[in-house]
Image (cartoon, rainbow, N blue to C red):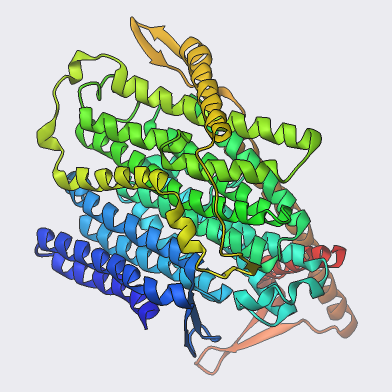
Amino acid sequence: MYLIIMIVLPLIGSLIGYIVGRKNERFRNLVIDIITGMEFLLVIMMYPSVSKQPIEVFVPHIMGIGLYLKMDMIRYIFVVLTCFIWFLTTIYSTQYLIKHNHRNRYYAFFMITLSSTVGIFVSENILNLFTFFEIMAFTSYMLVIHDNDVYSHKAGRIYLGMSIASGMITLMGILLLFDYTNTLNISEISSVIDSIGSIKYTIGFSLMIGFAVKACMFPLHIWLPKVYPAAPTPATAVLSGILAKAGVYGIMIVSISIMGNDKLFCEILLILSFISMFVGGFLAIFQRNIKRILAYSSMSQIGYILMGVALVGLLGEHKEMAIYGSMYHVVNHGLFKVLLFMISGIIYMILDELSINKIQGFGKHKNLLKVLFLVGMLGIIGMPGFNGFISKTMLHHALSESFYGREAMFLEILFTVCSSFTVAYLLKIFIAIFVEKNDDFKGQYKTKIKKRALLPMIILSISIVYVAIKPSFLIHIMNKESMFFNIKLSGHFVMDFYTIDNIKASIVTIFLGIGIYVLFIRKHLLVEEFGYKVYKNLSLEWFNLENDFYRPAFKLVYKVLSIGFSTIDTFVINLVKSTNENIKNLADVEMTNIKYNGNNSYKVSDMSKEIGSHLNSVTYSVFIIGFVLVIITIILVGL
C-alpha cells in the first residue's frame, strides 16, 4: 500500500495546491512543502521493511496487463534521492519563483512530475515504466516552457520532440520484446532473452534510445544546452539531479536486466559513455553561461555513471566495484549538481543574468555563497574529503581492473583527461565570479536572499561532506540487498578509500585541471575587448551536431521520400486513369456515380474525378505505412 500512496500523494498535492493557490499562494506553498515533506518521510519509514525483503504490489486491469510495483534496496536509493532532492527544491522554489508568473501552474506540474518519476523507479513491468516515463516527459515539458518566452518555447519544442520520437522507438522495442518473450516483467526477461537470437540487439538498442535521451548520452544530447538554461532553476535542478537519473535507471535495466550484460551491448555503451564524458567536459570549458556550463557538465558526469553500468557487464569477479561506483555517483551527482544549480539560481534572482562576462566579481564578498559553491565544486572534481572522491575512486578502480595493456593505458589517460576538464571549467566559474574584483557588486544583497533559499543549499553541502566522511553508509544500504537486478551481490563489500595511491591519483587530476585552466582558458579564452577582460566561446564556430548534421539529414530524408512518394503517387493515378479509359473503351460505358438531388432528378458525376481528388491522401498514407513496415522487416530479416 505504501507504493500506491507514494504515487498518489503528489497527485493529490498537485490538485489541492492548484485549487488553494488560486486564492492564497502562501498557503499553497505551505501545502506543497508539507506534501513533499510527507513523501520524503514516507520513504524513510519504509526503510526497515524494505531492508528485510522487497515490497511488491500488483493492481490488475490497469494498462491491460496490470500495474506491477516493486521496492527493493536498489530502487529505494533512487526513490529516497528523488524525494530528498524534491523536498529541498520545493522549499527553494518558494523563494526563486517570487518574480515569476504562472506559479500555480508550475507547482501543479512540478508535483505530477514527482509522482511519475517515483512511478518510474518502482515499476517492475517495463510497460508501466514506459507509461510513467512518457508522463514525466510531458509534465517536465511544462516546467521547461514556464517562462513563456520565445527561447523557452524553442527549447521546449526540441525537448518534447526528442522525447516523443525516442519514446516511439522505445515503444517499438517494448512491442518486439513482448512478442518474442511473452513477458514484460523486468525480473523475468533476462531468463528468456538469450533464447530469441540476435533480434535481442534490435530490442535492446530500441529500448535504450528513449532512456539515452533523458540521460543526455551522446549523440542524443543536443536538447541539453538549450533546455537547461531555458527552464527555471528549480526545474533545471530536478532535470539534472533526478530526471536524468530516470534515464540512467532505464539504461541500467536494459543493459543489466534485459540484455543480461551482453558483451557487445556493454562495449558499445562503454564507448558512448566515454564520448559523453569527453565531449561534455570539453564543451563545458568554452561556455560562458553558468547554466550551460553545468548542462554540459551533467552530460559528462552522467557519462561516468554509464561507464560504470557498462563495466558491470565487462568485469568478471570485480563487477561489484562497478555496481557500487555507479550507484554512489548517482547519489553524489544528485547532491553536488543540484547545489551548483541552486547557487546559479540565487545569482540569477539578484542580477537576471548568468553570463560570466557580465557578472564577474559578483561573489567576491558573498562569503556564504562562495563557501557553498566551493563545497559543490570540490565534490564534483573528486577532491579527497568530499563525496565525488568516493564514487570516482571506485569507478577508477573498476576501469583499471577491466582492461590490460594498451587499452588500459588509453582508457586510463582518457578518464584522467575527462576528470581534469571538470576541474578546469569549474575553476573558470569560481575564479570569474568569486575571486575577480568588481566594485559594482560590492553589496551583499542580503535582503534579496531569504533563509528558505539558503537552507536547502546548506543541507546539500552538509550531505556532500557527510558522504565523504562516512563513505560506508551507502555501501551499508546496498549490502542489505541480495540482488542488483539479476546480479548476485556478496553483501560484504568493503573498501579503504583514503589510501596514498587513491589520494595521489585525485591530486594529479586536480593539478592537471589547474594546468588546463591556467595555460588554455586564461591564455586563449580570456581576451581583452574595449578595455575589459572577457571570455570568448570558440565552439560557436565549430561543427554543430544539430544544425550541421541532424537538420540537413532530416531535410534530405524528407526530400528523398517526397520525391519517391510523388513518383509513386503519379504512377498510381496514371494507372487508375488508364484502367478507367480501358474499361470505358471495352464496355463503352462511363463509370458514373449517380446521386439523387431531391427533386425527382439525378446528377451524374465522373467517378474518376472523385478518385483523383481523394487519391493523394490515401496514397501517401498507404505508402508511408508500407515504407515503415518494409524498413522494419528488412532490419528484422537482416538480424
